[in-house]
Image 1 (spheres, one colour):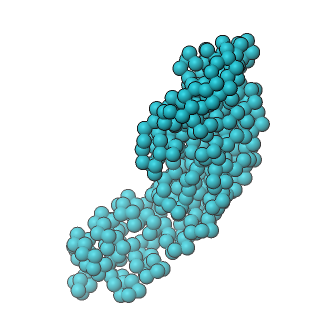
Image 2: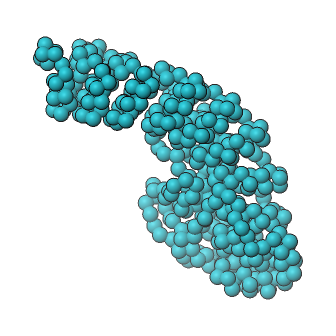
Image 3: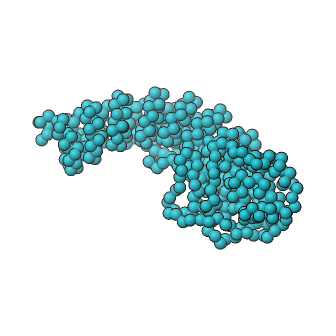
Length: 416
């Protein structure tokens, strides 16, 4: 289950993270369920392991483990960007639902090892167990809202995240709320499908009446931003075809192109720019553009594309930083090579104090970057506004390795 994008951006080097979460509950509390043919309550049986509350558990791409309130559940959602094969047809599930008496349905559900509550229903949905959910509904189980035991999911949200189309349709037929928002991230089923890049699920939900123009999460992000967070190119393309405004921003004035650029999703950037996105959009808080966002995260391929699409490589953020300083200060020789390839001015001065990149890298003691800058003909004789040279920076910071590199290339009169 994807955690809604908290995710962005340039305020941070905080990475864009897709967090799938599911029920997590210490053993003990009971969750009440009004079953027509069985006991009125059952104990939630999720086994949980404590982890530091600040941690998030991530995996690559669009799948991730489950986190909630400092507890990680052993129940995991196998998130999917495609529809999965299912053992039952929609008609099979409908017939089963109507053919079972409540007592029999309750017995068949619990015999599968599920607790008769929202947690058990979500486990069944996680497994794509349509038979179990048909029994759960026939026995009077509640599929319409999440519970404390199930940590805010519903079977529909879980089925959507798992890529179970037939099961999702069945739950919608049974009255599941297509616009229900999980209480942890305030994300709808359509938002989950978008962040997972499941275009077929998006189509299914739209056909069933889902609002694709919805804004979700604490930052009120549209579905384009959700899809951009995980590099879901096809989802972006589909959503644009449905008329979502390409430059629409969230509550902190970030748009899908900014998100895709920071994530290094070049193909997503291409889809968005071809869809009309402003390649030089500037967010008002710090003055970042998509290109600066890519440079900040050292996404060279994405930065190359944005420049080729018309991105202004001389643009400066509000603090005066530009592509030269963002990439150069990474200390990466590869970064310096990128600056040279893009014909950037390696002797550009920082507005604050007139320092050049060579001065700042010398003070950091970054020998690789200093060597790469010198090979690219950065001028070691320049001085900042206070008259200090790169050599002075190295000496004041007691960085002997960069000092020696500078001494090799400086004329004798500049070595004093």
